[in-house]
Image (cartoon, rainbow over all chains, first blue to last red; front, side):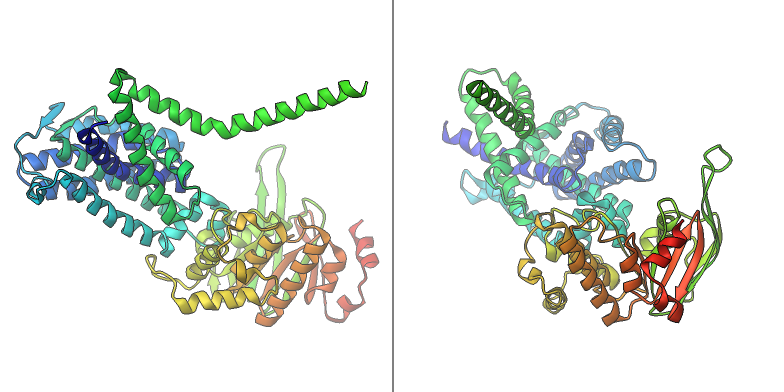
Length: 302
Length: 249
């Protein structure tokens, strides 16, 4: 792998680790696969692209954070107040967001941002090739510190308890509905931030850039949890970043071969399927083995 | 302290399965009383607890705790001053969070703290001290995931969670029934200790008649949604397991 490819993979790994922070909150902490992500990622990118186009890249990022949070609130309200199944609630918001995203992008499916100032342009003056990595690492550190602190506050602890045992929460006078609203808002806000940064980094936003984001982020979560098994919050968040970087490095490696890039999403899906089904398959194999052992012992006796 | 006035609850109203779980219940409990409740399955004991804690709303009547009418107060609001422990040790704690985190949540909830507050060192020490009073050695396992503890230990932690800040009322719903005899005895002893030391008004459902008489200051028996017997003082002292069993039939 060339140095350029390596730096590219690191950049992508870092920017998408924010996406994975978002799904860490919904998937790992609230234990819900939140499909809003595919929409809120684009929502963040769209808002950020439009405002970068107007010369306000930082405002674009703030707008992405806000809009992402609103998308999360809607999914949470569909789940809690309207009683719609969690997965379906996410799909509904995601579907609705497609139109909203097009609207934000002024009806165009693609916003090119070539030669527009973005938050990375100033950093070019650092004079090193890794300037994007420096900017991204700084942003991730801030998000990491905020999340790490948040999950030690009463609200953060309540959020974790809501995903872990709702009965216990109600008995501890936690309003689980409100807590879920906060959780999904926070999750999608960070996802939108990821989208916003991707748009500025790649200097374009596309209405279809969000498809498959859920699966990509799950792949990062899973790779991360294989590498760091300790699942307290600090380690969990760290594993997300590492997982995301490794995922991008694997993809970069695959791209150095002649493998067609169109297969990447299939590979992501297979990674997630394998990781999620492995514990179950292992157990089944163990039972089978024990069964065979018993049959063998019986034959020996008779 | 707790006044339950003519409370009714009927399930499956206007159908063949209509069933009065609570039938004109009147019960007055004074501050510091420890009431044990016995009765067969379907007598309405758990429904009574559900009505008090708010997981079901009663059809008619009123429930007054202290000076406050809580008949229609949402469950999670009541939970800040009513502690409740269930039969299932898995229900009361969050298994993937540590012993310390579980205790901190319930402590901070009951002290009505700012939602983005973080517990101080002093508060953590207070919680640890409380836990060490159980003599189960759990204070050294504050960082252990609660799911790794035994059912008895979990139930003991749940009990501490419910009483870290003294609740106005403590509801124990057969909280030792799922435990082995040794753990059940330990949890029973801890219950007695916590309740008497803090003088907590307590209601306890049990199927163990001898512990119903042994623990607490008053015993009531329920049947078909009614309170059919109410023993206290001298009368209760004279009662034996045999005499109560005779009434069961």
